[in-house]
Length: 392
Image (tube, rainbow, N blue to C red; front, side):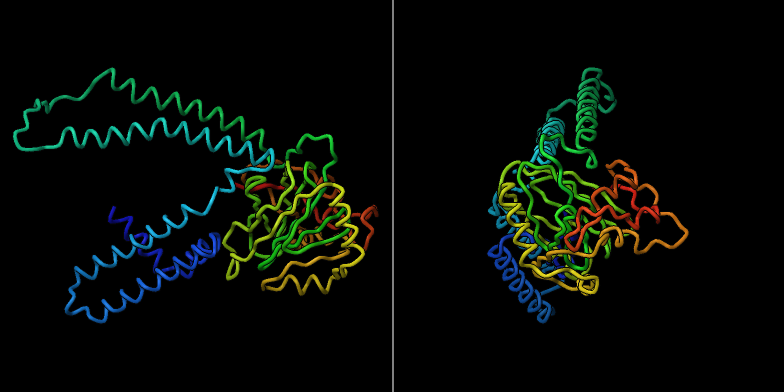
């Protein structure tokens, strides 16, 4: 336990690198309370350091350990009131299956962990040495067939069950596997930048920044890449994370089962403003989605190549809408760092399948209102648009 306290204390002292990210994902009131507590602890710690001669090294160390526990306790208390976990409140079929897998895995693990922890506490108490102890002294005892069968047999059975369930769900939740539906899948291309998300709709010929709108009940095929450090695309209530990496096009199929507004974010550390890589996902009816697309095409400015270059520069951005974007922009980004004469990246680990360049190019050309123009993608020439997948 002292080792854990030291770890917490180190995390506290590196708050600029760690707590800023954690605090950015909790409500503002909890954020404020923890920051204020942190300031109070820092002031007291400073005062103790200034009066160290009279206070004593042991007492100073004791206070620092206590301060770490105070901060940890305050965070736990405040976070306990942050509401329901988004992952456990899914709004789509992929998220629901992933929640079920989490619950099943937790229950199976609990069957082992709870009795072991309870027995450990009971054994320590029951067999502690105390005055007048009359327990049998058996220094040569080493084996019991019944006990060996129990503590080896039960875990082995549980591991077999857990492995079977995990394999089944892993194949069922393959991210590149299209979602079965009577409605036609739409494609959205997501590009992670420093520190913002660019979404292009190749079939509708529009683009957005830090905001998404999708039709509820319609499967969505997300094509992911990056024109910045690697990131991770995540909409917790719809499904798990998927990496976005430069020079690669990943595929993730999701669907919102109902209308609503869902939280999305970049779930990977990627620099100074990584905590600001958030976006809202608005799931609306198909009629509302079509009306929105029409409004954007009629009222929003166009995203030019020069505008994209400016957008790609490191920095934060507000929500933006564009009526069109340069043709083949997504696959230009995918092949941006490919050296001429060399192929694209090879397959990467992670749960995901591999598509073909033709599949990756399907519906990739859009912009200037010419989403249905059958233009060839630059990625086909570079042989770098394979849908390699990596994720959590």
